[in-house]
Length: 197
Image 1 (spheres, rainbow, N blue to C red):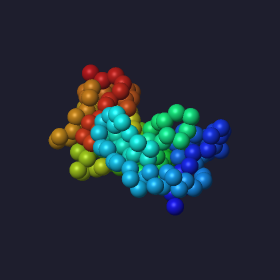
Image 2 (image 1 turned 180 degrees about the vertical axis):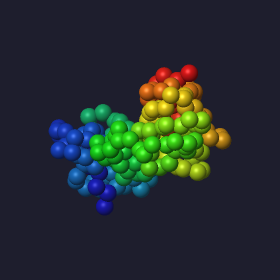
Image 3 (image 1 turned 90 degrees about the vertical axis):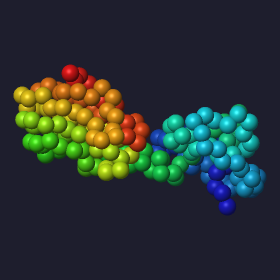
């Protein structure tokens, strides 16, 4: 039995999640929706299908999320689902951010390639000659949305760069006492925010 009937007039759940997503406020059984889901189509694209039916599923390739079309509320709409890899990653990221963001790693004194352990931390760089390198997803598969900061305490500039096949938007050299943020935007694409030369 599918457990996804939307309740109307609900309030924000105690967990503080968006009440438009399920299962936050979906808690009764829906035999009519079950039959709709049995016949639902699944679309994989960067934009929503133009003529969806109740229960249709859409995997948004641009934002990497799963949505279900629901016509039983006040207005028909695409509802974000939970329980997917992406939502599990988002929950994990929120937990990590709440508990560990801005903790520094041990000091890196030679060229360094980012590791999974660096996620949501500040990589403390004291590198005389060398770089901090973002590895390819085939080497270290950070979830999309991962954020890593780099702080340079050495008088020598540290180069922040992508490894083979990795694009780091705005890559460059980080001066002493500079700190930048790296955010994974796609499989092998990162965006650097902050001041580099």
